[in-house]
Length: 243
Image 1 (tube, one colour):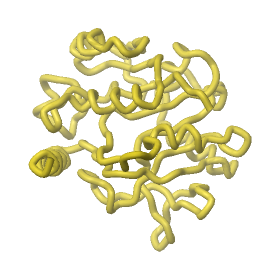
Image 2 (tube, one colour; image 1 turned 120 degrees about the vertical axis):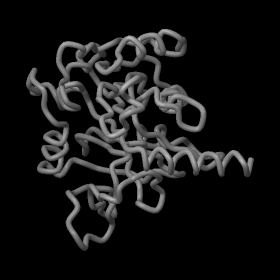
Image 3 (cartoon, one colour; image 1 turned 180 degrees about the horizontal axis):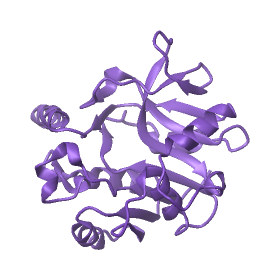
Image 4 (tube, helix red, strand yellow; image 1 turned 135 degrees about the vertical axis):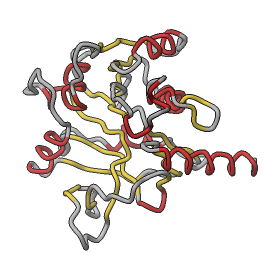
């Protein structure tokens, strides 16, 4: 499947990273000497994405200045300065800026490193894995032992064929949502115009037995707290020292 359109969810307040985010948006917080969003946009560019919608709210002017310097995408701004739409409402609004059809959706506060050399990237594998005949959403997931900066919460249980259900204590293959999924824009045609949580659509896909996941390769990094940021910095510094 050829997929060139993506939505990046970047409007959050980053409250758990205060006081850093008092002065900058969370996606621009430096990690390993680079804005976090650098890693994410580089992953998207490598996967063949050419057109982006991205929602902005917190320190939106800084985000616009940063995005203006990226020449490798056509970028559409979904402006939430007036009202935050939560992740579901933000996605539904941003999708209206993109053509209908398959779209890659990615959070702006996580990324991954150490993908195996000589293999297709995680995002390219995710795009290939997505089968609209069987799936409402195809989601990138990670085992806890690949996660850096995560609080230990498990999100889903993954069956042998990749089908996902909500995690329950004792499930055989618990995984963490790695912050990227593919779907057809039509799946959210019935979304309200108000703020709502994206979990509504995850659960809708589960109820239809049409939420699937595929495993991330490499190490997944999430920066949701000062402790997570410190863990990510230490990991990347150790990587650089070994290089």
